[in-house]
Length: 130
Ligand code: HEM
Image (cartoon, rainbow, N blue to C red):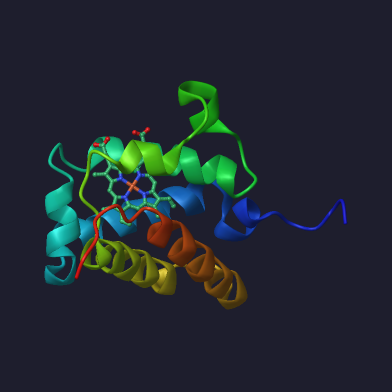
């Protein structure tokens, strides 16, 4: 259907996406539940915030800001310098889950996004654990 809203619109467009990403990184920066994933971000959170916003904009059907500036995301490859195991994955998802639950996004969209983020975050793991 040509006039059905894309996920970007359901998130609340540019403003809604900024609110989501800002809250996500604020939680990462402050919550004890996110201590390990925060520690992976050795250069701080500002650049990560700007890039996640740009990536999610295009990924959700809005302006393709990330690919216009940086080209193909190659997300797994770009995460290889950082050690990501199940703890880091789960803490990333904890922050995102909580930011989504606090947002104005419709519940059915939140459930959809949680499922997709869980898949992408799991794909980002690059450290074997016993
Ligand atoms: C699974 C746990 C994850 C960890 C520990 C993690 C960690 C990081 C770190 C440390 C950076 C570098 C930030 C910087 O440049 O200063 C980064 C970049 C990035 N992350 Fe993640 N991330 C995770 C999952 C995800 C997921 C699920 C997504 C997408 C939904 C994502 C999207 C991005 C993007 C777009 C960048 C910028 C890549 C670049 O251009 O260099 N990350 N991440």
